[in-house]
Image (tube, rainbow, N blue to C red; front, side, top):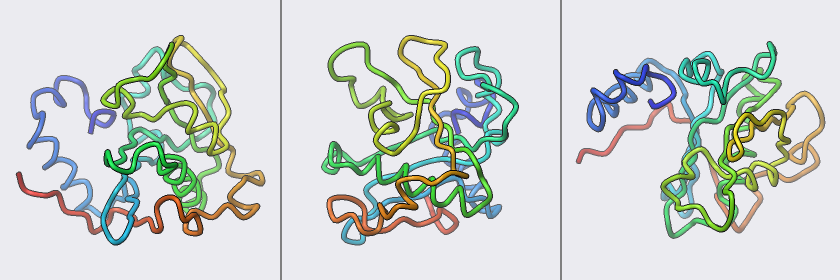
Length: 188
């Protein structure tokens, strides 16, 4: 909900309030992302959709639109700790590209972090790392901050996916993705 809500509203309903808002979004039939599974268990998450669904992006001086072309935005990536550094993020990005293309998108855009040096603590990598986006075929199109490139994948040209790198066939990573239309948050 971070990119969907004005900052004061996001902060005022932090935690349970934002979970309820997300559930309400899903209950409307929206499909705000995909889940990655291994052995029937969810191990990863990728939030993406048309950029206009993320109004906070438009108010960011660093992430403002690069041009007037319509894009779909990848705004959040999460991989469960035991499955990190095994290519799951790259597979999620490839699956998001497939899903977005099937829904009419021609560009998938992301706002990953590029660490200045060394490793970035996982908690700061929730928009993804630029290295994963590059591995998934994205290229840098703008940079208004030393650590935050804007990266795109043109979906209307041949991609690695169309040349046979199907996510479901990758044994090292997620074996299935599911649109989030039937997701329910866990009670805490």
